[in-house]
Image (tube, rainbow, N blue to C red; front, side, top):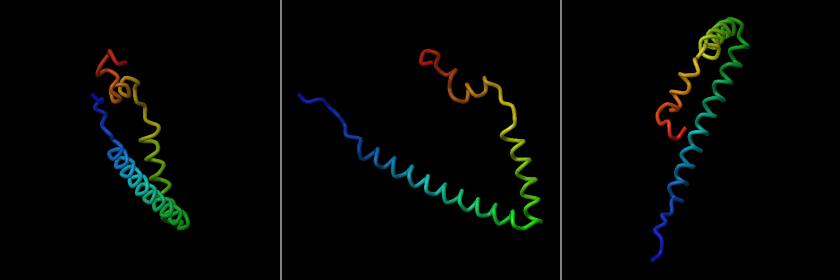
Length: 84
């Protein structure tokens, strides 16, 4: 009796294709945002407002304090103590 081994090559290929398409779309969006940013920086009136908006976004998102327990709970550290 031969062991029951399922070939998941098709599923893995489909997952790879989906992720590749998603990365390609996200890179196109990022490229368009960079082009928009560069165009705005060439225009003095728009450039100043972009810089102000970027500064507020950075201060609100990147520099905000998040406690360690929040990060651990979001990553599922407290869900199952045996696997940790």
